[in-house]
Length: 183
Image (cartoon, rainbow, N blue to C red; front, side, top):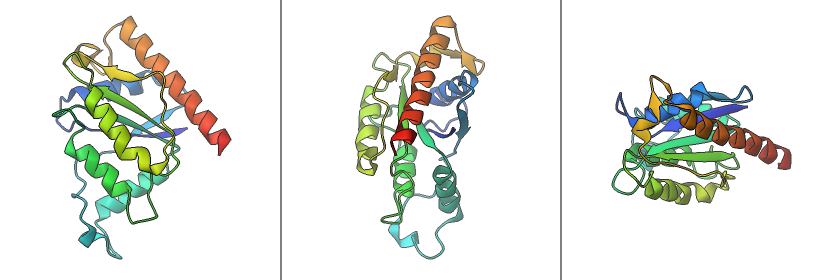
């Protein structure tokens, strides 16, 4: 199953980016997780939605459309997801009636170096994508508090983190399969 993974932290050493790589490192064989970059997407502006929208938008939309599912990995900035993540949701939602998100099974992993695990970002992102009837994996939830300590060198930092990430991705793979069969 081809999974498009969007990572909200754009900096080179972003905690969400490190978590994303650790998730990829332990992904079950059933999941082919491909990171889809969102940092260079021009801000969504309806005026640019012409017969020839920005190439970055077209490329992004094609990559999401070609995936079987979407995995959002988001940090929390000021109690919400970063602007780049919201912009990616907006770019994928247009043109009107042709959203690339509609019906795609998805999961949300939120990260924070603090104790709340990106709870606010996770729930605001859920709200942002709810319009698209994206079947969201509800359990297990992934609010990763102190996420900076859960990863090291592109891998889960210890057996407990590895077990947590593996349990989530196994459930996600089953979720995608169940959603695909149901449709």
